[in-house]
Length: 209
Image 1 (cartoon, rainbow, N blue to C red):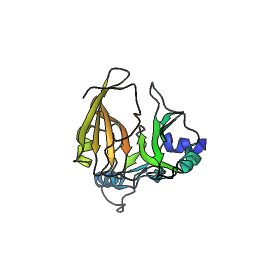
Image 2: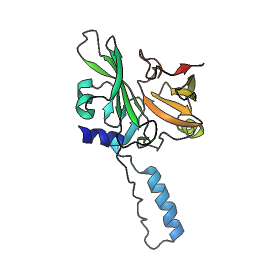
Image 3: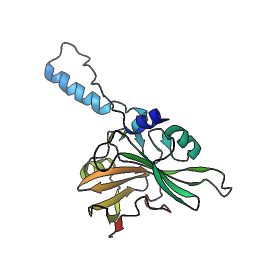
Image 4: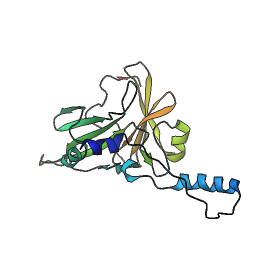
């Protein structure tokens, strides 16, 4: 299970450039061709973000028992009244805040027998959308990919830095920004706001607007 967890959170991906079809072409032409190939190359599915559907190998609507089989026991979390956040940290992260994957779950229906995934949040830049969007990108870059994103709220974190939350509600993807760059990406059901969860993932954050 730990190996799977590391694959989801900490594996390095090497994206090899495609060789030019014309072996006799000029070096400049080859370079341009290679850059275009890298941009359009498919993302490893273990690290693929699909708005409104999945992040890596975790899917919206997936049974939490299956999530546990993939990731093992969470390193942290919070739970109340059948709703919960489970948080898994990457052991090879560096810095004060380790990379994490957080999964929000609740009961699937009124039978209260199965809990399934309602949101998936990641902070590692190993995860990318098919067109290459990852954490660490600017607001402008994010808006180019998701023009419909709107600001939902702003918070002061534990370091007194301002975190702004944006959401492309109709597409099912939300973002947190710090100092002009995204620090997390959250996939959620389409047409459901990213902040429409029962529990706050970061209760220590102070809402400012």
